[in-house]
Image (cartoon, rainbow, N blue to C red; front, side, top):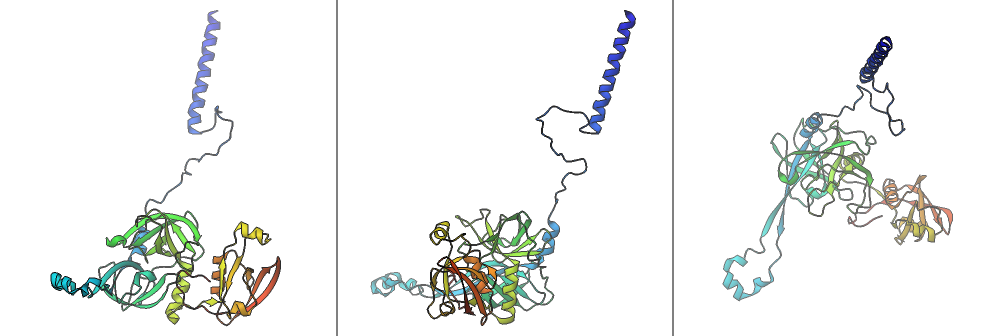
Length: 387
């Protein structure tokens, strides 16, 4: 009996020793022992494969900050004449205080800009320098330079300035189609005039349009803090390369709500090059007014999809009118390129050179037709108008 208990005790001790060894081994090699669970096999990060986050964006900021400038503008305005100024009794009572009501006043504003060439070309927004008769550019090193307007494009809100200075730190442009939703971005500018500021966020969306901000819209949306004074400043990627020019915010209070918009570098570069070469931007125009095709409109017109743009109006005697295009037609293709919506159509026509005979594919009475319109130069239009 004693031998039996001794054998039992030795067996229990051996089993405990084996279990202890297995537990220790499982800690060294996770997953060796089976565990009770939901029955779902999950994939876990192995040792050494933990995500390595970027600890700092200081290098990106250091690379791009010297290329971002503060812009100070001023203009002279004349106050409206007070109608009571002609009352002799009031003039006698208030004395000379009425005499200055109609004197000119100077209004000042601020914004930001981006140096794009070492010889002094600077990008900013049209609304930053609009109607200004004096423009001062403050470099990050504190030096202040006078600037002149090379040209503006109100329909994209892009303006180009020029200062007389050599060896300026020009920013590096990012590739035009390399941006993705979720990419980290930095917004650099002069918000509220407090001085150069860097904020960080991500790309929230691409290709934002139908916002009513400008005629041609294809914005980068970001949650990087953009506030008044940031307009015209740089939006750069995590490597410090320019991906856009900050231009607008969605806000009910005037401050940042996490919805900012920047003009992508693809548009900025195209407009900038035309302004530097010609002083203005030339776009195609055929004299039509268009509207979106809603599901209800598509159903009423018997269309298979809502792709395309509905012709709501045609300018009499314009290129579209001479080509036989009528209100109610649906344009679905321009020179072989499909029309997604009204904004897409506007951009496709604007990209056509004046004088070109453009082939327009349209749908009328549920059948496809082909029209050829001679493109003309787009006239200057108020921002609210559309093609």
